[in-house]
Image (cartoon, rainbow, N blue to C red):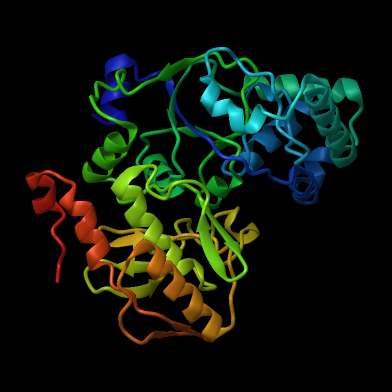
Length: 369
C-alpha cells in the first residue's frame, strides 16, 4: 500500500511529509546573502510581509524551516528541543552531544545572520519569523525511514506522493525537494508500518515501494574513503541483501569523478541528465555534477564525494572493493571524457537480490541479457 492510498483513506487535505534521518548542515549564511543580492529591491522596501513572501518563494526547493524556531542553518550544531512524539532513535544521532545552551546559541546566531543579511532589527526579525511560520500548514502526517533514499524521495515528490521532506540533509535540495529542517514541537501524526497496513520489515516495505513503480533504489549511508580503501561503518549486511547489492554498485563507481548511471539492460555506464529543468531558478546554484535521473531501465549510482585521478589507484580501489563484496569485475573500460571507467558486471549482484524475492517478483524483475 503506497502513500497515495494512505492520503485518500485518512484525509487528502492533510499535508504529507517524509522524515529522513541524516546529519548534514547547510550554509544558511550564503543562502541569505544570495537572496539579498537577487531581491535587493524588495528588501529595500522594508516591508516585512513582502520580504517574508519573497523569502518563502526563494527557499522553496532550497530550505524550509517549519515553525521557524530559527530561520537559517548555521552549521553550529543541531537543536535538542525534540517533541516526545518523535522516536528517540531518530534523534539520537543529532541530539546526543547537544544541550539547551547550544540550542539557544544556534537560535541567536540565526538572528544575527538575519540582521546582517536584511539589515533588520531584533523585533523585525521576530515579526519576520512569525509571518513565515504562518505560511506553513498546521496539519501534517510524517513517515520515518532509517534509509538514505534521496532518489526515491525525489520520485515520490515528483509524483506528488509527498509534499515535503523533514530532514537536515541538504542533499535533497539538489533534486528540488522542498525541505523542512526541523520542527520545534512537532504537532502531527507519525506513521508506522502498521498505519500503512503493511506487515513486514522496513526493508520489505521499501522493496515493495520500488516494485510498485518507484524507480529509485534507497541505500544506507555507510561508506567512507580513507587511504585508498573503502570501509563500511558497521555491518555491510545490516539492512539485508537489497542494501548490500546497491552498496556494491555504488561503491564500484564512487571512485570516479562523475555521477553516472548503470543501465541494467545494456550493462554499460551512461551519462546522467538533470532531474530539474534547465531554466529552474535553483539549477544555476547547484554543482553541475550534482543532479541525476532514473528511468525504468537504469539505477542511479549516486555520489561524487570521492575524486580520484590516478588510474592505478582507481584499479586498486576497485579490486579491493570487489574482493570485500565478492563481486565480479570484468571488461577493460568504457571511455568517458577524460576518464577511463571500468565496466563492471552487475548480474551477480542483481541475481543475489532476486534470489531473495518471491516468484512473481523474480518474473517482474528478470534480468535482461
